Length: 317
Image 1 (cartoon, rainbow, N blue to C red):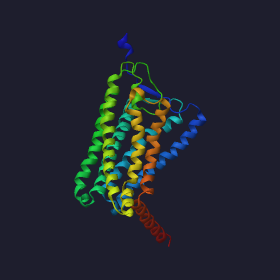
Image 2: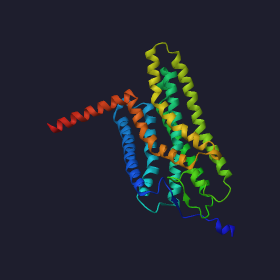
Image 3: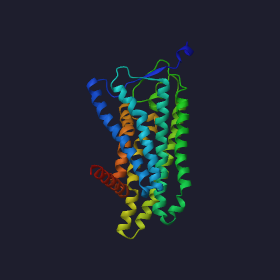
Image 4: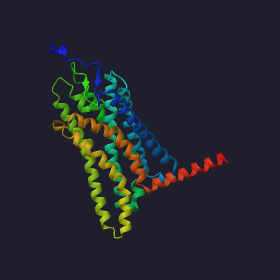
């Protein structure tokens, strides 16, 4: 009888944020607008970096990767959530759930490693500026970016594989907005201590290790900045890192809060809000942070808009 009960369900039901129709419609409109802004903003950042030769530097090469990750992460979760806002039967097939978990987990891991890589880039720029071009050459940048994508993907493949080997019995209601790792693991009708250990190890490797590297980089960066004699020089050096530091603070905080201690994880409502933060708010804010706090990006925008205005004027004439 025990063998019969331990079967794998064919689909899951996502309970989402609310069962009230008016609330769901309002949330659909809000999140649709935010998702479109997210995709458009990250696409424009990639396009701007591609078109402006002044931005063909390691920093903006990594920013291109970050924008692609952000847009892809939002796309792995938000469209399905929008569909569920307007449907009564909020089902997601088993394979679709596994795919969503894989892509969201992979892209999240890629972002954490990529932010550590960007911190190293800023460290070299501030602490060893004369050798910056020699150290951060194209080959190294490509290898660092590939390492980010590969490490996040391998971790996600392993986590998705061991998660969906768990028997779910008749448990198919996921109290979440998406097929999030902890929410799916909780459905299992067997002991999940080995999965929790795997989550902890994964968190240490792909979350805490990059976070520690970021901290070490910024300790060295701040130490170097404080040694700069001129106020203008200190201001310029800090401005070089301000955008990245803001994004780091946004991305690492809640992830550490969520995944580093599965036994004392936050409430279901907190998990949903954190997932929304990563799926919509962070990918939407990142392009704005880099655009508003970065003189080079603002200059590139002005140059591009100037060209566009000139072209429009000629066509109108």
